[in-house]
Amino acid sequence: MRKARDPWEEARLLSNMAEDVASPRTPLSASFMSHHRDYSSSSEFISKLKKAVRDGNLLQVTFLVREVMETVSRAQVSIAVTGDSGNGMSSFINALREIGHEEAASAPTGVVRTTLRPAMYTSPTFPSVSFWDLPGMGASDQSLNNYLGELQIGYYDFFLLITSEQFSMHHVRLAKAIQESGKRFYIIWTKVDRDLSTTPLSKILLLRNIRENILENLQQGRVQEPPIFMVSSLDPSLHDFPSLRKKLEEDICCLRCHRLQEGFFQICEEALSEKEDSLKAKMNNFSKYLQDTLGVGDTYNPEQCLRAYRLQFGMHEESLRQVALNTGRELSEYSDTLTCRNWDSLRRANFCLWLQTFCVVRALLFLLRCIPRVGFPVYCYFERLKHTRIVSLVTQNTMATIRKIWDYVTCPA
Image (cartoon, rainbow, N blue to C red; front, side, top):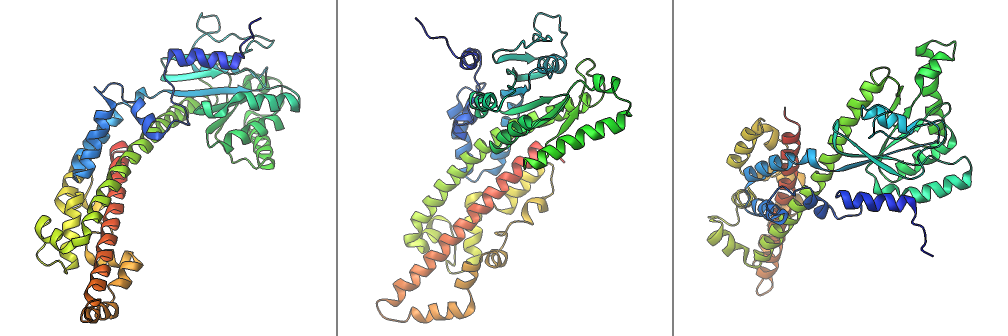
């Protein structure tokens, strides 16, 4: 006899056939590629980005950030709606989707448990977002343990924890499990309309008491305070529903940006690391490389060498000026925080570099050159060490600048 499939797993398999949801365990670069289906080739985009970084073309990096942002709204997000049975999770999903209970596409609701397996719903109000209506938690500790085991928190990007009547320790345990996974979540108290109709307390006092009770239980469970909303699924225009909708839209956008951001930064870091290693490999004869390839007249002048390295990474003033103009920022917003903007600031920012170029140490190294046979090779070793350290610091400054470019493009002034 064929074994019945687990309803949780069955629902996920159906979803995977219908859409491409990136797993949280997927490598960031692979996740990044999955969100660029509109390009002729994801690998082509990554190659363009790596080339721009290796060539020190920060203006091209800026253009590619803008290209990435055009795809943000199409990145798939999975949101789990969970809580105790009878708390109105399905009704809440319908209200959030702005759909009536009687419509064919609505989540089934009723006074008895109607959600027996995970069900996925979408809404044009939240493009490329999957809302998962999960079965409710059980009443016993044993059933809660089973529930947490079946939940597979890592599958979802975001959680909406639904509660009403009371915020129990079951909710606290679920909130703690979500928090420990590093996922965002809200606590949503539904059926406020019923609470208001059955209490002599004023609305302000009632909502304050509910919030304080939730926070007290969370503190006992050592759970950090999440966003808390009081809503009525019967009227999505009242109470905290409008602010909930706005907050959810903002956090979905942030979640998408963060997912793409991490992949973007990883690719840039890989390209910078390759460039850094390439430059360091040429340090065996750094004097010849600086003179013949980088055009440095005095290879023992640290300011000239630093200027040449900055040029290699696109960190010179003209490059930063173009980036600042394109992102609508002042040049100073990029240059003032750089430790590699000149030799003195770089030297002060790194103790090892400062120590190596301290006047007493420099004098000792100069005297070391005069020792026959061993003196000059040892002196050259320390010079190579100094140059490799400079290259590493310029690399770090470049990555910090790329992060600024991302921030300034995604959050215009």
